Image (cartoon, rainbow, N blue to C red):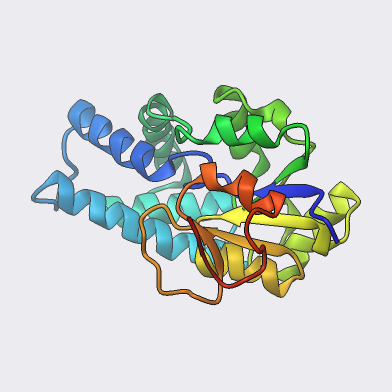
Length: 239
């Protein structure tokens, strides 16, 4: 069956989350000082990323709510027990710096333009709708998508097949008519394939090592891939 829709991941796929997160933390350190217990900004940044992965995994597994994973990240980062209000206040200040650094990848709008007439578009994210709606609106691409589904509201996170199927249901299409594009090989591409979609791994950093996955190194390669200029579904890297 022909692919009729593209389902997108957001963070580190369309939106440069990693760069914005690091730039936001550096800006916060400059404004508030380096938190106690860290000898350098690099050490603090590494700890922040470690805690994000840890508590995001807990949220994805259903072990905590979206707000609880945020508070746990702040407590772990600052190294002491905090009230919910203290943790929320710190994270709110962080968001000011983080949002100031928001940017799409340079290839995001061009690929949405290139695919605009031929395919329908939706989002499936392991975040919350409030977070991703604001992000997409600030970045000027909210209206590009028919539907935006997020784990916090679904009660399911990628790579659970039910999360992908919910997005296909929102589009009214069977999984085999939908391509999913994301930056995580297992959560995104492999999860999509396991759910019956056409999974594409966006390997921007050239990690490689996953010959069983269809992969691209940039979003500029996606239109030709979907158009059939390559054998979609064949393992390997397009490029």
